[in-house]
Image 1 (cartoon, one colour):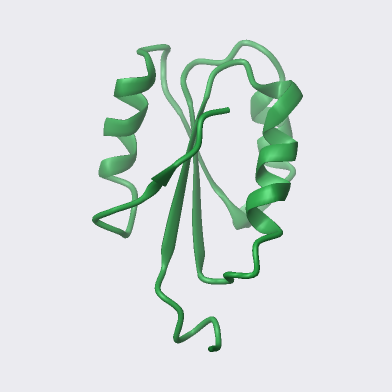
Image 2 (cartoon, rainbow, N blue to C red):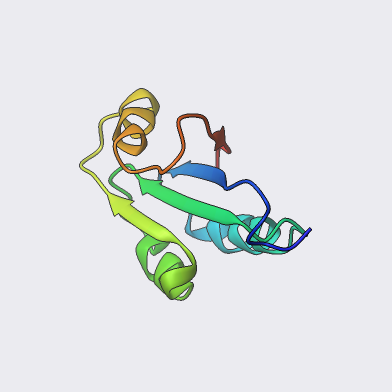
Length: 92
């Protein structure tokens, strides 16, 4: 099945001060054989280098920053961004 025929999978990754792990997380998601991916990183007010690591992935991901409001707020933020009514969340 080609990527054009595959269903779109949305992977939502909420993160707070995850500089140490976000690169490995994104590499893992991008290494999947399913090609029709929408990857949304929701940064919940990180004060470390999380944003810089995420920026290295360019247009392969969507990066959203919000003031620290907790994990539930991160999930709500993505509901208005995702192209899918259902999604997969991964905690980093």
